[in-house]
Image (cartoon, rainbow, N blue to C red; front, side, top):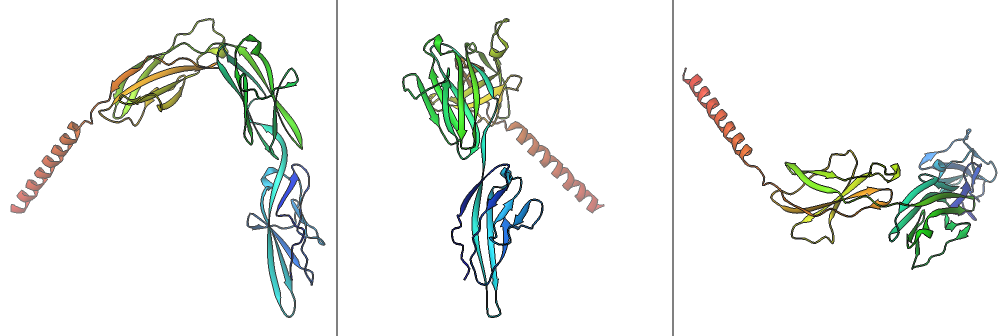
Length: 319
């Protein structure tokens, strides 16, 4: 009988090395073993080699693309009988944490506000996160610092209670293969001024907006307005659950798929590297009713054309 003793269903190998996927097949007589990756049969070549004795699969120059489902299939043939049996193995390719985004980030906040520093990486196995300042580990403190961790993300939320909070912070992500660091420089800076919002027009369910904000001429480039957030609600609702849409500078500020003959309330806030500023004064606007005149006109035109065609055909028949 064919057995796969001492063969783990989940196996690991580091990126860049020659990975070995074990398949301890036991059978008498000696089995013929084939390997499959994601359903495709593997052949001996520059990428793969199958050990003639223990049937393990070697994967040369292992990359993350080699991670996935492998199948070890054993065949035993005798003059009396035959047996085919397979064993599924999942291979995880391990690699050092890899930073998603910039390795050095400059961000801004003003005293009295809260600021989130977000660290995102990919890694296998999953990373351990640490936040540091002046080589000292920052611990969770619900009064001034709260750290939220998920599998590949760490967010440190700080209450900027005084100017001592400004400076450099490090997010360190590590696993058994190594570590990577992201440096955050937190500087003092104010969010943008309150913008001016106006409705400039409407076109078949599309509300067109004008959003303007005044900026000082000598403002730091990093603190210039980068975009806007527009929120809106029905006039009968509260601001507990508004619909939000974000725009970049230079976009066409339009809200699509708006209901006809409906009263809305709009507001907008400007965004820069320090975050969002205050929302504008609410702007009330009632959308137009669905225009039926063009539909009636089109129907009348079609009726007239049909009548003309009918009389033309009748006249032709009489002739």
